[in-house]
Amino acid sequence: MPKGNYERSNIFDDIEVDDKNYVPTYKRILNQSKRQEATVIGFEDMYLFCRVCGDLKHQADYFVHGTPDSFGRRKLKSLCSDCERHSTNVRDRLKRENNPPDEKCNLCGKECKTELDHCHKNETFRGWLCVQCNTGLGRFNDDPVKLERAIKYLKGELKENKNDKD
Image (cartoon, helix red, strand yellow):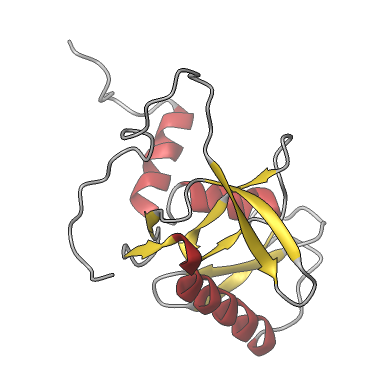
């Protein structure tokens, strides 16, 4: 499927069903040799936008999450298989090139199991962080401006609030 701007619509727009709780699913082979099959949420002919590259690709170009929900259904990952493989290769390479993980988080100093922190843009190693710190930075999209604003907010120094209409 070519790159481009496509109108993002709800996959349920064209379906007429009486039950408002209807969730479409289809069967997908996970492992041909082991004959593993999974019930996946969506449609067999569904196309999705990759969260990383932004390309519109067929559902077959996405990996399936390993953990099913409480109904035994699985979701597709938000990265296409090409971006997922690239991301895994980058993390594996950075782990090989850098010292083994510290027993101490480089950010908060807590002694615990740490994980690799890296810049997604430059694909460079930054350090070893605990899950909470690494996730926290990721929630701010690793953006120093957003983090500085959050610090000002926590200190009570943030003068304007975008939600204030006064």
